[in-house]
Length: 228
Image (cartoon, rainbow, N blue to C red; front, top):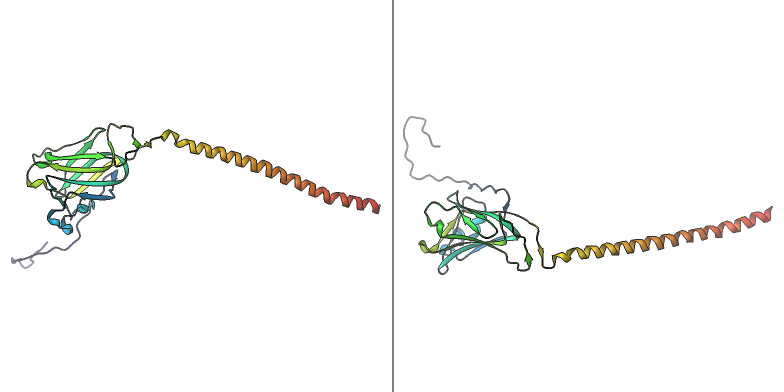
């Protein structure tokens, strides 16, 4: 706040406030992506419009995606397969769109009459050799893709922040029923090795000790007999 204590007004030609932009607080169960890419960077200006700004939790930055050639998209990659429940799109520092996912697709709550109706979200997996049990309240995948097709502004879109909400779930690859076989074989080997080593080594060591003791005691007894 600027204030004049003398009761006189004052003129300000320029005022610059220097500070660090506030960072966004992470959502509960938010998945932090390992990477992000998009169809193109607006004006090829990576310093101001890079895709990475959409997931950096910094309110002071925004990504800006351009068309290539008739559609624009931004895709985040997760560190493993998750069951994605929601995706939150922030614009101008406020939550703009919420996508809610099921086992079939993800739908948005777009209602402001803007071009959000032209946006879609797809969750999919880059791993083809998995068997996943469908869950009604989320979609499995390690890729989350936002896409805009049709409309004006050459299909471009800005993103201040994205938040991916989800959970880990149990899944196995093909032949997953055989995963326990290796553990069973290992247990058998452990039992065999343990029993053989303990029984054979222990018994033989005990017998050797008895024989060695006899070899010492008997001569001493004979020598004592002759002295008598």
